Image (cartoon, rainbow, N blue to C red):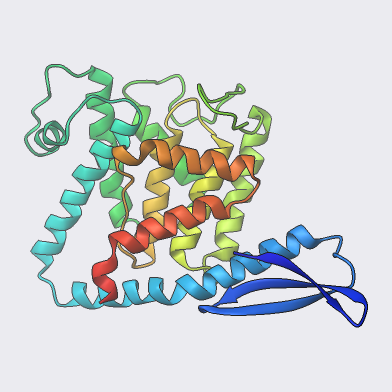
Length: 291
């Protein structure tokens, strides 16, 4: 964490920025008055110290994950990817209200057996999500507005033809919570700005942080009438996968925490709220690659 320390020296009040870097306490002299841009200075140092602390571990995960994949039979890797697809399809649908169980999702995707007690649209959209996942795993393309719209069209081409593949043309707000999404006429420029931001930062920012920040920003834009969470989580996974990092899922049991972190980032105007949660979860779930 970053804080401001006030000290008396030679009869004068001096201000220092206290922060940690690579586990060591450090200070930066600010002057005899608090800078007008103190909030921005604190935010920059918080992000810098956090990166210095977490990036080495994230890079170790990628290194050991890559080594492990190089020595693992392709059939095993394919089976693991297939298992992740099933888990992701179940989880991302469940977060949005689907009643399908993990077992039912597996039977649907592997054996084409539809559960009798599930809405038809949930079944169809689960199949479409798996289809997008398969195409995502094979794509070498970068994130673009066209890709985002194409995925959305695939997701809803059989269940919501009026909105499939189209950005929303009306303002929306969450059923619960205080997040304010962008106005409908700002959606296209904001998505274009987000894609440009991704292109600018993808070579310098660690992909795990990049994935977290992209997802947070995408969800705050909320570009569609429906499907924002599902498309957003696929894009989150794509960034990790394209950069050689293990993919990560959001479990339905984490739904409230996940949504609360997104909302808190908005209310506090501090993206680090979501980034810290995301990176901590990522490190925890991939600790086997840190040994």
